Structures are given as structure tokens and as C-alpha cells.
Image (cartoon, rainbow, N blue to C red; front, side, top):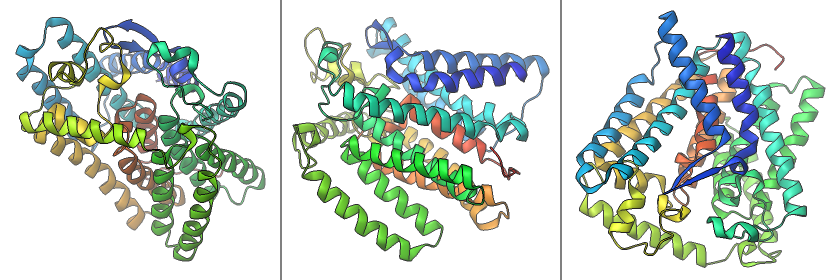
Length: 410
């Protein structure tokens, strides 16, 4: 377990590198250092678990296996439409999802002493991403030199190491909720309280500098959910009022199309993406077109033409995670995916209603708020299948999978 802890810490330290360490292999295949770290961690866990013959049973093992199994079956059923290369590439994306889901079992199996240290590394990773974002915002305001690699320009928007303000914005909201949970937990410790307060404010400013409407909506919904769970109804109305004022002010500071909150180009593109997904779903309602064969399906439907479709980021999925699941795994896959999240939410609601542990109750509220927020966010971007968001959520859920006895230190 000592080796596994070391690899886990290294993986979290690789997390802030984001998409900067992305290696493209062509045909839509890419890998980051973070993917490599997660892969090595899960492989090491599987080997150590097999050798030691020790495995901690979990309430999520069945839901995860059911969804992964349906994804694989959907691939096999659509095998006739794929060549060997397309099948293997799609299968690798399924393996990646399984590996990221495996993070939950790894963190869940850690002893309580080490679990108490994990939040420190998460705060460190999140803080590096936020500070890198501020440096990028003032020193590197656009991605013009990377357009040829399939990235958008994102002029005058914060995108940090994720190279995308929308995915960065979604992560920053999750990070803000995490910092908020720690902030409330350590309110008696003036030093930690002050540090976490400053980090939370900087994180909040960073969310607004992404000019991501999906992130702003996610932030609004997540904070409201958190306050409602904490029964802070008066504070809820104040937050709503302040949020509306900030959004109005932000909408008047646009320096480019991307910073205009009333922009319509991206909205029209998302509507078009959803229409495409619905057409594919209509033709493949039961088990979909196969996970993750969406790129090849769009090519067959004539959505993407020419030589660049295999490397286009837009061809890999649709701007809605639920439509993505429905299109690639059908109604059966979507129901199994919803069941997985139902089990997670049910556990956290149980903790809020029954636990006497302060940490458990606060972070149950953080997790529920994070999930509700990402559900809203994922209606606009495919954030539920974004590797860095998957990793963050699985770690967070694992940290609060039982009534952890957390002392007053990280």
C-alpha cells in the first residue's frame, strides 16, 4: 500500500499539468501525463490487490461494472461498422473510463490517516491550476498558436493548463466547493481559515475570468444547492442578488466575442451538436452506436468531412454528456449510468441525515452540490467524461464513502 500511496501522490502532482502534457498519436488518440499516472496507479493497485488477496467491497462495484459491461456490449454489437483500428481506439477510451473509475476503489481502501492528508494534495493541485490561470490570463491571453492542433483561440479568457475555459470553469467550481467545505470545517483554526478564505476568493474570481456561461450557471446552482442543504435560506437570497449583479457587470466588460456573455455562435453550435446526437439516438435507441465510437459515427453520418475529422476535438463527442451516453450506449446504458449516480447521491444524502461526523456531513453537502452542479454543466459541455473532472469527483466521493473520523488538521 505504501507504493500505491506514492504513485497516488505523484498522480495528483501531475494533475495541474492538465492538457499541456498532451501527446497526440493521430487518429484521435491522445494521452496526457495525468492519464499515464492514473493508469500506473490502477495497474499497481490491481497487482497488489491480487498478490495480497485483499479487496475492500464497495457499494459502487456493481453499478460501475454494470455500466462498463453495457459499454463493452454496445461496442461488440456495433463491431461490424468498425474496422479493427476504430474498435481498438474506442475500446481504449472505455479502458480509460474504467481506470479513472478505479481511482474510487484505490482511495476508498486507503487508511484514515492517509485519507486525512489527501485534501492537502488536492488543495495544492487546485491552487497551482488557479495561479497558473492568472499568469496565463495576463501573460498569454489567447491560443492562436495552437489553433492548428484543434484548439480554439479563447481570446482574453482564462483557460490555464486545461487550454479550454469551459472545462477549466467547471473544474474551478468543483475546486471552489471543495475549498468551501474545508473552509467551513476549519473555521476554528485561524491560520487555515484565513488561507482557505483567500484561496476561495481567488478561485471565485478565476471562475468569472473564464467567461464560461456553463461554469457560471454551474456555480450558481452548486452554491444554491449547498446553502439549501445547509438550511441557509436567508443567505441564499443574498447570494442570488450578488450573483445577478456580478453577471450583469461581467457582461459589460467583454473585449472579444468569447468574453461576451450574450454571444450566440457557441450556443448555436451546441444546439447543432444536440440535434446531431438526437438523430443518431433515433436510429440507435437501445444500445447506441458503441462506446466511444461517436467520432466514427459522425463521419458515417456525413457531419465531418475532409482529412481533419480524425484529429478534431469537436468530433470526439457531443456537448451534452447524457446525450453522449444515450447515443453511444442507448437507453440501457443511460439507465445504468443514472443508476450509478443515484447510488452515489443516495449514500451522501444518507450521511447528511444520519451522520454525527462534522466532516462527513459537510462533504456530503459538497459532493451533492458538486454533482448537481456538474449535471447542469454537462448539459452544455461533455464535462462528465472530461478526465480531470472524473478524477476529482472519484477522489472526492471516495474520501466521503464512509464516516471518516477527521481530526482538526489536514
